[in-house]
Each structure stands twice: as structure tokens, then as C-alpha cells.
Image (tube, rainbow, N blue to C red; front, side):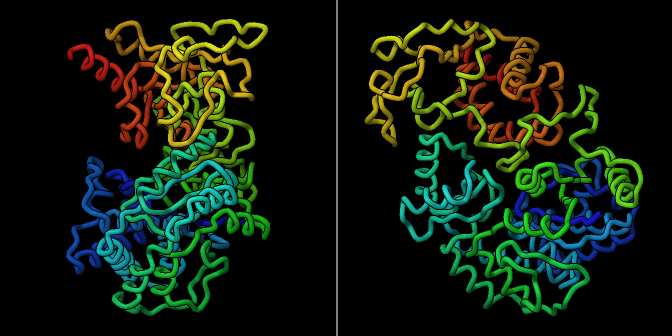
Length: 526
């Protein structure tokens, strides 16, 4: 079996204690973490490994430099665990700054120099203090690039081609918000990315120059393993690491193409050196059916790796994370989505999301979000039957119980219901009805959420455990979580719930149900 190691880029800060077991088991992990700690101390930063190896460590945010080094520590520790257990990569690939982790893992430069370069990169980006954002859009790179070119600003560009239906646009914050509104009107799912430093845009040219001038030049060599660069479009050869990191700041990352080229060359397993499936979701979306392994997302990471080794040597079949039982006993982990995965930040096809797909047929909803009410009926009431012919023109209040915003208010023109020539049976749309009263108990809300989520995802509600992580255990991608949270927000008349990022970062039905009950109780008390 030919395995490729993939290194995540800027992801959320790792959980406390995530490396406890690896630290106890492997001398190489202990040595590497010690070297990262020493480099951090020399740069005036706090200890990096302590929080990652303590069982009760909390995920505190201590600045972008510490966040980058924690991600690096998790990636390089996972790499050493894989090597110690006998998994040898045919290549290593990194997403964005993850390419620096790949260079260190492959031996192109030392762990200490990689840590110093990561901090130098963070510091030049912080100094530039660019007011930009990055937006994931659930379409292919060609359409995402056309959307950016439509606005015609030199700093608004297609930044990443991650999967067939997931691209990232980077640009000034005001323009990204405009792009998001246009994407909503077109029915394209989108999600702003929570990253400390938006990159991969010409706007980063000054930061790239500063990095080349200020970062210490470090010794580097050929390395032990092959490193494939998604932004260079080739293997890393005799390239200066400082120039590589600086060049990536202004360049497009073509992960989709790199993944497919490696698979065409014989790679049949991709192993993510991170806490959660991030890059492997792009892989699954780009190559349906390929084997992907994320050891740290398993209940027993070492056993998962040993099973992979056994399979590669002719042993029993590898039990991937998507077939694993739930760690909390609430039911099996199942692949929640369509059979042919292709998605945004996930294994699922984001353009198959019913959310926003009928935006032209539902002008009564805000352009910024259209709930998939034509696919998921509210739990409290059944859908009314569809008449034989479309209803004649009627005032907006007769179409839905929410107020219809005038067309002139919407950022993108949308025809009224009565005038839309492509309107198909508008009365089949079931409006999202708010609850009749604010006095909702937890069990009632949880049951309704199970039904809502189960109907949307196409799985029996009793398989959705209240403590199952929506993304980590059930595989629900970020964009689908945004769509579902928007439906919950509309159903319970809680507009602030839609912007609660904590329910997306570590989303479970329990946390969402508790948030609904608490918010409804607060609304009743006002």
C-alpha cells in the first residue's frame, strides 16, 4: 500500500491532552516536542507541549504564533508515531503553512528551524495587519474564480482549489462579504473561514518581501521523504525554505490537482497528521472511494495505525474512522451524505445541499440565507398538499408567515414570487414555523433536532447520538452544519443562534439543544 501523509494548515487550536498517549509511548515524540519547546522559549513564547500532553489541559488562545506551533507539534508528533509503527510515506503533502510541517517531517530542515520560520511568518503577517477574509464556496475553482473576477479587484482572488466542489476566495473583508451575498443569491453554499491571517492573495506581497528580508536563512537538504507542493505544482527540490514559505503567501494552493496526481501515480491511502479530518476530506471529495485515515480522530490512534500496517502487509481489513462505533455509545458512526462524496471542508458534495438551491423560487426569504424548507418539513406540522396548478399572484404575507423584503433591499435582484417565470409550484414550499410557545424543555428540543437533522441528512434519528460530534464522529461538513444551524435558528425564531460559531466548532445535538432552550428561556423573560 502506497501511503501519502497530509499535513493540515491553519486549523483550530488542538485540544488539551491530545498528545498525551503519543508522548508516553514514543521517545521520538518526546524528543521532538522538547525541541519545539526549546525553540519557543528562545523566541519568548510559552511552553508549547505542556497543554498538549496534559489530560485536563484547556484550549486557551495565546496568540497566532502559539496556535501555529501547537498545530505543528500535533502534525510532527503524529508523523513520528506513524514512522515508529512502520508506516512509510511515498510522499508528504502540506496544505498552506502545512507545507512547512511537511518539510520538517521529511527532513528538509530541522524542527527548530521550522518552528522559527513559522513564527517569523506569523509576525510579518501580523505586522501587515491586512483587513482581509477567506471564504469557502461550494463550487469548483472555475466558477469561484469567475465570481472573484466579476468584482474585478486585484486582491480578490481564487486562493485555494481544495476539491471538485470546494474552493476558497481570499480578499478584502468588504468585498468578501459582497461575494458571500452573491454566492447566496446564486445558491452556492459559503462559509467564512476563521483564520488568524488570510493569505494566498497578491495583497500579501509586502509580507512576503518582509519575510524574505527578515527571516533567518536556515540550512536545508534533500530530505528523507518526497514533498509535493500544491502551490508550486511540483516536488520540492533544492528550494530555500524561506522562499517557499514566502512564495506561498501570494500563490494559489491547488490541493485538488496534487491529490489527483498522487493517486494517478499509485497512492491508494492518505493519512492525515492532524487532530481532525481536514485535508483528507478534500481527498475523499476528489477521489471517491479512496482510503483515508485520521489516527488522532480514532478512539485508539495507535491501533488504527497498526490496522493500516496489517492491511498493507496482507492482514485483515482496515477499520476506517467512518465505520467505527461511536465513542460514547449512542450508535455507530455512519457516513452521513450522498454516496459519491465531493465537498467543502468535508466528505460530502456541498452543491448537493438543498439549502439555498431554490433561492429563485423563494424570494420571500432573505437573500443571505434560504432554508431548505422544500426538503425538510417542520417537526411541528406536516406539509400541506400541493394544488394542481400554481396559485395566482398574491400579496407576500399570503406566501409565508415572514415579511417579504422589497426587491430593492436585496443586494442581488431577485424576482418577486408573482413575477418569477421559473417558479415551480411555490405552494409546495413549507414555511418554517416558530414554536408556539417559549416553554420548551430539553428532551422536546432534542427530539425535534434529531428529526430535523435526520431528515436533512437522510438517516434514522435514533442513530444521531446527542453527544456525537457532528463533524468529528458523524462526518457532517462545516457548510452543512451552517445550513442546519440556520434551519434551527429559523424554526425557533432565534436569529442570534445562526452566528454562534461555538456550535459549529464543536457541534453536538446536546450543545445545540441546550443553546435553544437557554435562548428561548431568555427570550421569554424579556
